[in-house]
Image 1 (cartoon, one colour):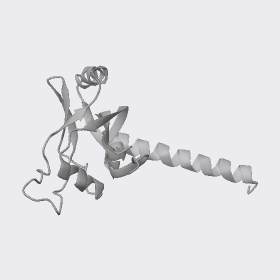
Image 2 (image 1 turned 90 degrees about the horizontal axis):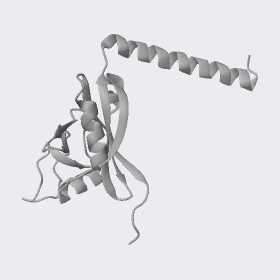
Image 3 (image 1 turned 180 degrees about the vertical axis):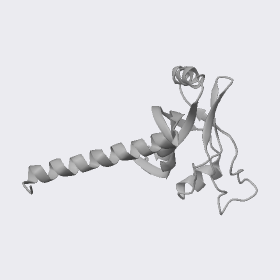
Image 4 (image 1 turned 120 degrees about the vertical axis):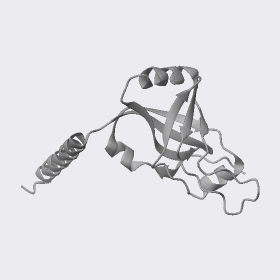
Length: 158
């Protein structure tokens, strides 16, 4: 059987990009059990309450919900158990240095399969205040309006 290639998205945390300003993004593998992988392949996971912690030279992903596999037996996993992330030591050291700052956290952005392996994209992020969120929305809308205007101008509509 040929190996799986490409990127298959399982779950995405869209609210994280709204609630946090993303400073740096990292890709990490995860230590999973068999029923967790089967549940993920069925497209079932939630990242909304998820966060990552740096503990004893390792990074742990907590709060994400991978529901139990429907056809699993007594070997089924616990849905909200902490999961260890697999990263290079230099990346872990860089993350540890950034997380020492106050107001900085590790947030999972997306969960996907890449070439058959389960991966999670985590971001070093700083929380936004409500006025920062409104300002970001206003900037995004003004950029979109400017792009529309230049598009109409290039087509000769105006």
